[in-house]
Amino acid sequence: MTPVTTTPSSRAARRSDATPSPWGMFLRGFIKHPVMVGSIMPSSKKLMDRMLDRVDWSATKLFVEYGPGTGNFCQAVLDRLAPDATLLAIDTNIDFVRYLRQTIRDPRFIVVHGSAADVRQIIADHGHAHADYVLSGLPFSTLPPGVGDAIGLATRDVVRPGGAFLVYQFSTKCRDFFDAHFGRIDHEMEWWNVPPAQLYWAWADDAPCEVELAA
Image 1 (cartoon, rainbow, N blue to C red):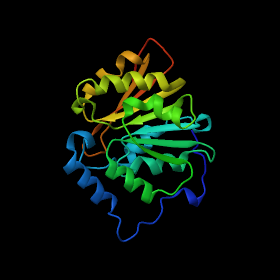
Image 2: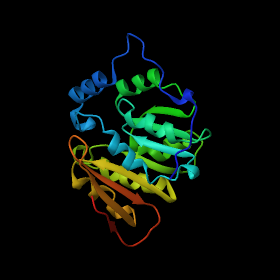
Image 3: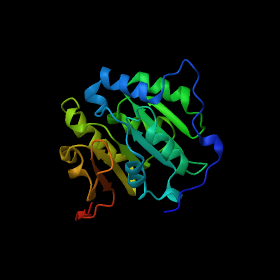
Image 4: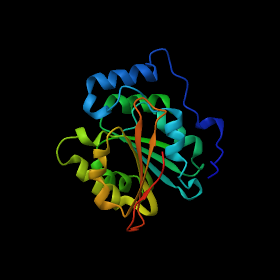
């Protein structure tokens, strides 16, 4: 699908000398909270392009991201997002939240310090009834007991019919947390990433079958 063209104002603001680099912040976050960050390397451009390629941007008014980290995916989403749409990012790491508020100056971007399990309340607090797409790179298999299940259920509740839960992971175990809530799940591998990643598109259309695509 053809991305929506945006203005230069959608680009991240230039960092000040006091603001760490994205790589520095990402490494710092991984060292402080390894079970929450999940990887020591940001996602590759190939992974991001492939993950976002199935989004119908013309029908997207609210795009939600769990665990945005230093904003690698945030800017890729903003580059495609319509001028009147919103990107709502949710992160439990206050350091990442502060960093994103400093470095991404875009009126379409909102970052919230909170848990993805509370996504229903968070999007309601920002005036939305549902999300069109939700993106997650959270390490489901290392989350505290019960949190992954709560996130899977809450996400299915907020994604509109025809929308999707987009998940990229390094373990297939993540599927256990959302498989029961979505009727159709597409799966691919992205080898051009460190480490290679499992990609999932869980569609909120209640279709009974799964489509398994070639890598």
